[in-house]
Length: 96
Image (cartoon, rainbow, N blue to C red):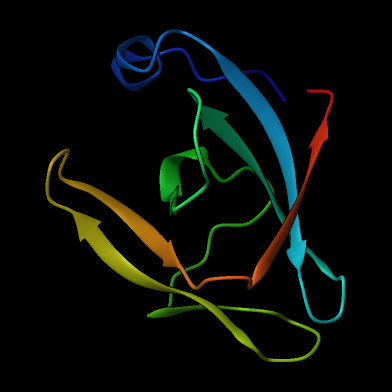
C-alpha cells in the first residue's frame, strides 16, 4: 500500500501514517486507514480506507455486528466519510 499524496494531505502538513483499525469490543480488524495530520481520529474518509470499501449507512463490525460509525458527507470538504462513535475503534500504527 502506498500513501495517497493529494491536496488533503498537503493541507494537513504533509504528514501521514497508516493505521490498522479494529473493533474495540471484539478486536476484529476492520480496515487499514491513511491518517493525515495530527489530532484525534474523528472520521474515516472513504478514499483513505484501503482494505475495505463499505457502502452502507453504518460502519459495522463484521464479527459482532456492533455499529462503529455513521455515514455522512463532510461539508467543509464535500467528501464522503464515516463519523466514528466514541470508543468504538481501536487503532494501531502499522508500516505501509
